Length: 232
Image (cartoon, rainbow, N blue to C red):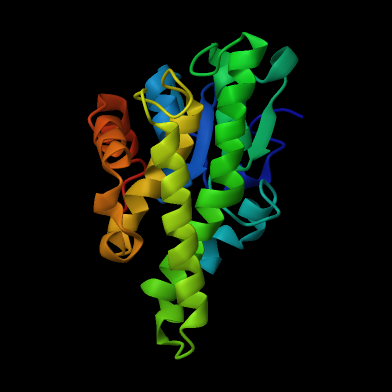
């Protein structure tokens, strides 16, 4: 395939710089993983705002790139062996960008797998569980009278915070050195404030986790990435 001619998504979101990596995203906890990673690595890229509305994520153009209709997604015109590569799923994107640039994912096998295990911890645990907490605590699920769903996700969020708190004992970052595991995890920790859930999950009772998020948010690349793409 040739980029951009053979990629239907470019009909709706045309590239400004076709030679650059193309990011299709929105500044959610999953979306900013990709923008923060791109800012950290310094790769040149075009950004395209894909809102969460059905008119965007369920459009034929976006579904041609991600049939699961979720952001973020990327196209790298200069992928493996010089061929364009389209990719969705934020964890896969982080691994790909780390391998492409040689940054934020150790090459030594043991250290690499330590980072990947914490990446999977976020992908399989923190992200889905915190997302459900937000639904049942702040959004439409908060109207459900049965308290059990809300209580379940509050309890799970508290448990997962305990896992993070223990892992941070004696180190600044979740897998030792700063890595893609932190870029995956920290935006979801930040989401607890957006959900107004700090008190119910015992955020203040996890001082290492609080300091960890503060360290993450102090990074210049993180501050830029959190605002990409602009909501307005």
